[in-house]
Image 1: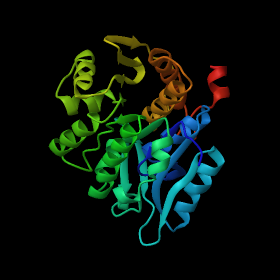
Image 2: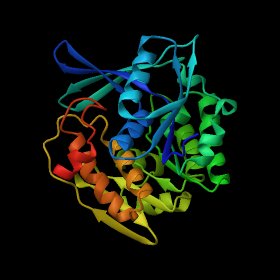
Image 3: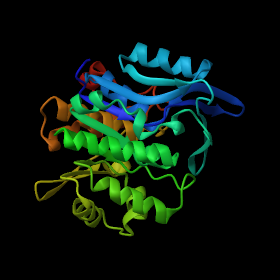
Length: 301
């Protein structure tokens, strides 16, 4: 079995992104799948652990990971459940998501089905609040994966990625707080973090996340960059000015880039600078996957 830099656990999805009017572009999404692809494009050995339906969409996701160099040996097929879908609509108030994921194959993940050896050997295990929200079984699987990684002396990365369409805020806060207690690295977005903590000021939010457990907190601030908390210091990493087209996968791109650079030996501050630059490149095209930058894109600036 390969030793992975990053193994991502959660739900992949097929995406339909509204370009204009009734025109839709088919792509791919699902936060942890996006992270795995972003990391692979930037030079990491990444893998995904999940379940897919025995359908055309599931095969398309397998084909995608094969093209992108993401290891899918920990992906199972569920012949009695579908692969999940989602739709992105764009308007004056930004982008809106609609999901067709109830009863998806990924939601049938359980702790008993985890790829224990792969988790124990991966440098980083990454998952999100969505992984924990899609079902009770997936929640148990996600938390157990974090425990397995920690017991093996590996690091755990967690993006809260709050989706209130999946669960009520109080339940989300409780479970996310539990997950943060098992995480070494927290990668929250500002809007989500405000709802989780009830705090407003980014510096206060970073301190609150540290108190919940993680040693490294990288709070993404959209066009304003990120705020990095590490080793007792809080540092603002400024954003990179770009003309944004679609920010669908920007946070996932940040996560993948940040973990990739940590896996290469960068300091958290250097990794955060790189991740801010990568996520700025990712908002200049449509969809969650297509605009994710490569090593060559990053070198070209």
